Amino acid sequence: MNDTSQSLKVYIVLSRAYRAINEHVNRRIQTYGLNPTEFAVLELLYHKGNQPLQQIGGKILLASGSITYVVDKLESKGYLRRVACPNDRRVTYAEISDEGRKFIEDVFPGHEEYIHELMSELTTEDKDTVIHLVKKLGISVGNR
Image (cartoon, rainbow, N blue to C red; front, side, top):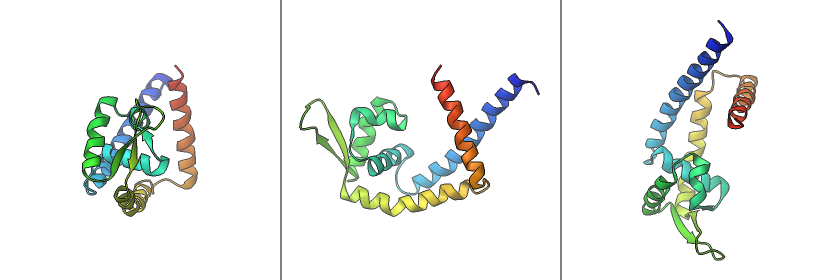
């Protein structure tokens, strides 16, 4: 196999692996009563603290126009609230509520374990290698 064909093969293998893993994880997330984007926002707030609404999309790879809809849904479920920035009226933060914190604390350990199970085919060394190589690839492509 020539180098060009091998590059295409890497792309296909990465894409198929991502799709397979993502389908399993998304089905699991839906059992929590959330869609994957809602879960990603809630998980971001839980692990990183309050976030300006304008920056959430970039952190979870979502179009900024969709953030308002997702935040509205999470707010209606009582999992987060909007908080005005005291120093800049143009900025509004999303803040996880006590109910949202309890929810994510209840489901996240099982979620993390499920992902671990999906990755069980790989050894710790395999995972380190995958992390290193995929990060290397992502950085090089991102720098183009």
